[in-house]
Image 1 (cartoon, helix red, strand yellow):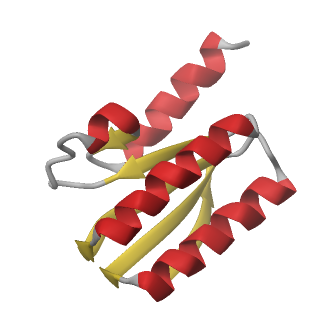
Image 2: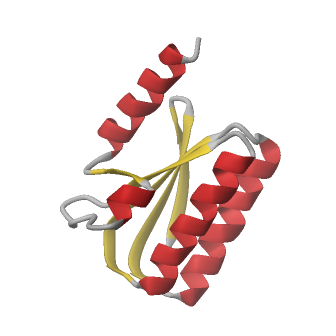
Image 3: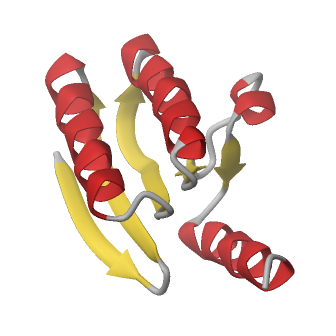
Length: 112
């Protein structure tokens, strides 16, 4: 399941349940739509409510992060209580949406 909301300067894409191939495709399509409308978008993928985020979902996040950065945007991932492990070395990972939003606000002020 995928829901979309605009919060401050960010588009929050929330995934829930088991993130399988179908959900990964929907998430990829939505990220592409947001980036197509506004290439310098701040996108937060909130996977904190996902019961399972499998290898395909994790690979998608890494791929989409690279695409967002090449287009001038950025991708932030909320994993909640999950241990980010090595993913934290590759992606901007947060415990909650507020932390991701605070980082976006901090980055915006730094580049002004």
